Image 1: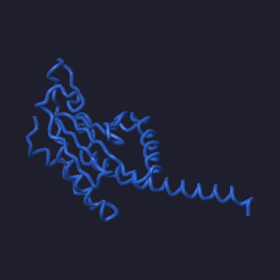
Image 2 (image 1 turned 90 degrees about the vertical axis):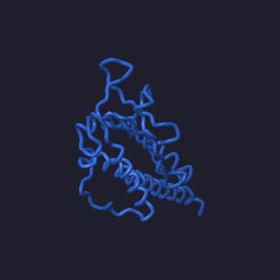
Image 3 (image 1 turned 90 degrees about the horizontal axis):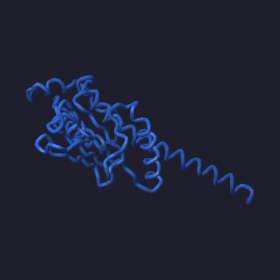
Image 4 (image 1 turned 180 degrees about the vertical axis):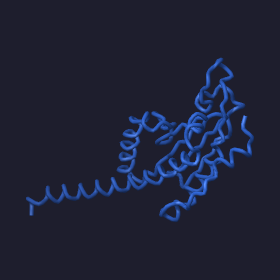
Length: 189
């Protein structure tokens, strides 16, 4: 069993400040980073209901005493992260910003594309939690095989990149729609 203080020493890397992000996004990502870093103190914990089984307690929900208090970090009502920790696993659900119907469709297509390739990401869940766009599940086995601060960096980088990717797709879609409209209306001039 790990001592509570030993987990903190393993997870505090000397990482640099966040790359160039918007000023309003930086505190949000920093809050998510510190919350994830604190929640990633996972330990091996056998199931209390099935002998010789080790299941993610945050998914099974069979023992309420090993579930910790869920935490929501929100930038606004349309952009938030739900962190659900337990003794041997943590589930991170992300609600991606969707300002209009086009962004809603783009986010749905993008997350569907990613979840179809969930086995390549190891920690990505195939089905997100209701009310969120994408979910990750990190177990104690993941933290034993991978560096904890790199897992946190991956989640933070994913959150930064998905916003950029959706914005770029929307700009490309608008440019393409403008080109199609202009080429369609050219014969009428």
